[in-house]
Length: 93
Image (cartoon, rainbow, N blue to C red; front, side, top):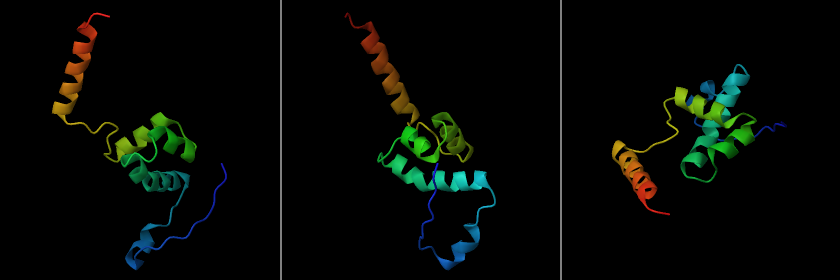
């Protein structure tokens, strides 16, 4: 994968936290840059993983270690979805 350097404006007090020590930290930083675009549905997890050059499941696992869930449904929303699926299965074809 080819890489390119970019320049961004950040607060002075943030500079000390931007230096990455290894490829893992660089990958994590880049994944976090992409996360808002996943969240607002500009790109998918699969597309973000492709951009980062990793497997989708690895990206999902990485976000999970940061406490970012792959599915962000409430319990009620999940139960509603399950109910809909059960009703669809019981309908004659």
